Image 1 (cartoon, one colour):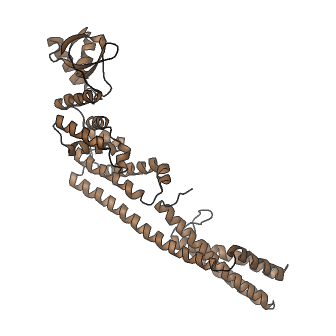
Image 2: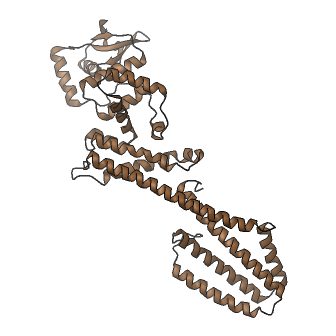
Image 3: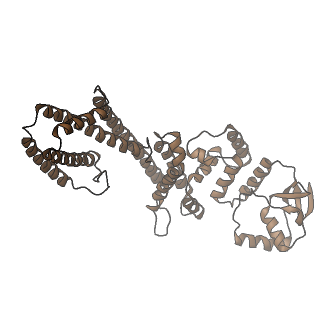
Amino acid sequence: MMDEIPIEKLIGNNYNPRKYFDDAKMKELQNSMEKQGIVQAITVRPIPDDMYEVVAGMRRFIVAKRLGLTTIPCMVKELTDKEARLLSITENLERADLTVMEEACWFADYLEWDEQGHFEGKKPKTEMYRLTDTLTSMISMSRDTVYKRLSLLHLPEKLQIRVDQGTLKVKCAEAIARLKELWKIKVTNMSAEDVDTKRDQIKADIHKTMEGVVATSLDGDGSYSLNEEETRSRVNRIINLEQQNVENIEKQLKKAKSELDKAVKKLTDIDEDWEDYHNKLASQISVITGDNTISDKRILLTTQHDRYDMNLKYVTELALGTCPHCGAGVDVDFLKERIQELRSEIAIINKEEEGLTNELKDLRKEKNKMDKLIETYRTKKTIYIEQAKVLGVISDE
């Protein structure tokens, strides 16, 4: 139904896909309307309180208000929310001046598309497929094109702006958006709780990777220099390397777990609780040696030796090059020299203690055995924990 409606009874909608209105085109439209009036009626729908919502023709509505018109020719239609949104996008697409990202945002809104859920690889709701079919039957765009537009919303804002500015071609942007597949790789071994905790950080890291692809391939004018094929090749390489990295860490973790299990088994094979047994041996040795200063010195040197030796194994097996206690850099050659010095000093003390009882020698032999088992267990546990943290199996906390 056509009607002249007072402008004060009209309100704009909040679902118009066009977010930015080109000043030059708005001025051109204003000049045309000053000379010819409104040639084509705008489409509105009735809403409560005897008001009307502008469905299609927002620019004409805005210019009419600027010109101070009191009434506007309107095509009044009874439309549901979904029908109004669909008509709005159809009208704007026909004019072919929406930006790519405006199209993407509108499609997401109409289809009730869950960007985060899709980023994480969750299956869309069945209703989305029905709405997509309705949408594509009204516009000259395939389902595949609509989904590719939606994929652009996976890009960080910086790259979305580049798409609209034309410094990043749409096909290249769609290829870069595929890096969302890194999500599944990165959370492969994470618990649901850890994923919930780290969700924002994981996505931020993937966004940085996307930005890195563009940042390393810019022309002098600031435009992205690679073509679609080159971009897809780079994206595939990043995804494959990440997958290989995870697989390698999983292998290392499996090996570390196996070695840790062996170390634990050797301790648990002892009849008593191994910690209690170790403490008992130390106590018995202490009773026999009493206040023997030679023994005290030996214990001190042995403690220093064990600490240096553990540090050496830690930095060489993990290849970290830092102290496990304070994080400072470690000189491996220095550790080796110091360990050798301590062994020599302990050997001298051992000769001085040859006069002690056979019982003490047996206790010390057993305790030395336990010390080595415990040292191996702690080293293997440290290695396993570090690998598990890298993989995300356990939290850093």
